[in-house]
Image (cartoon, rainbow over all chains, first blue to last red):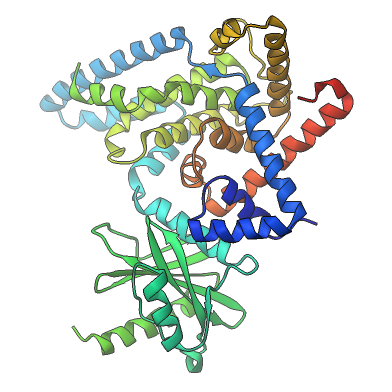
Length: 262
Length: 181
């Protein structure tokens, strides 16, 4: 049976936790022989891999091939540009020709990945889902446990970089169960945790910047809804249905428009 | 040389060795790895305008991974042994030459072979995250970018990959007690 802290210990070993979590994990490892052994294994495996695995390098022949291919590509682009000046309808066919030679589906996949998804929001969505999943691991859901917004709100003041809207909607089926600080997008985001039936809803908040975030996203069965209030960006994450998630988001939006009428 | 080419060479090509290492551990042969890297660099060049401020290394490795997996898809499963072959450029030659004791160099060589073999015996999914984390020293977010996986999956896959490697290593030690480092 693996210690439920094993993934956190691994994250600690990989330098993925902040100082507060690191201190917690160190305390845990002190008292857990299994996790101490895990840390030693991780260290030995890393040392052995870094020392003993063959260090492959791109050969000079490969480098030469690549330089040549890039030269061809550059000159093709130049002639394409001058051709485009004369007949602009040629441009798509040039690209189709270039693409079809390479395994069209793979190239299409790469282009969709690289060009059409907002590059910046992509890792953020991953991070939010990752943080949501981590929060569901034993004893990671809540740092301050309370159904009282007057307890949760001041706690954020000392533990997070932002001060989000906190309210209990128990009557409407969304019970406030506490708050947490998560390191997200290079800041200590405030997370308000709600329970809805058997589901946990994490409402993340962080200082908004000028990035365009999606309105919604789905990743690995988790739904994400984004909205902005004032200078805060909010994101609600859960495995509830869209309607249930939207229900909470609407309550929060209504409340903030009452508290801060624009 | 035009401006785009110059920027591409400055930002992306420094990661060519990393690209090759990943391709080498995903491909079935050095020739396949060469092909995957060349194709990936060309695609990267064509899509270079989309890179903007993102991390060039993670971006290039994501394309390398795409090309490598595409090349593998549809192929018959066969034994995977990416042990160094003649003609492979292996960087640690100088390290061995500089080692005063030729015997310890030979031992190092042996360990190297052992770990290459252990890595080769893992699934491609496990090899991939191990190379990115332990050899390329990428953090979870970068690995998530390269593999197009959520961070939670990166964490659990990495844990399983490390456990699998450790299990193979223990088997090896049991089979050849003197192989213990």
